[in-house]
Image (cartoon, rainbow, N blue to C red):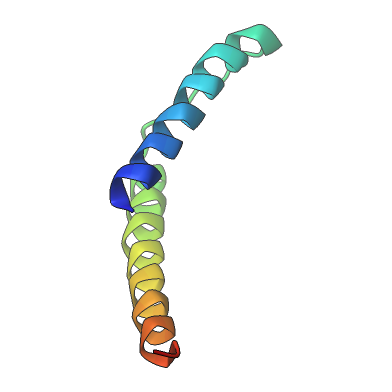
Length: 63
């Protein structure tokens, strides 16, 4: 299952990498402390929430 998720993410990245230049829009990401803290918070808490929710749902799944 993890391999399938990784492949889906890879396909999405390739599609975005090809499609983004086609839009001809210049995007710049400023590597500020606020950006880093926001990214860290989203990664840590989003991942933790997903894991807790998955465990909760698996415990409630009928066998």
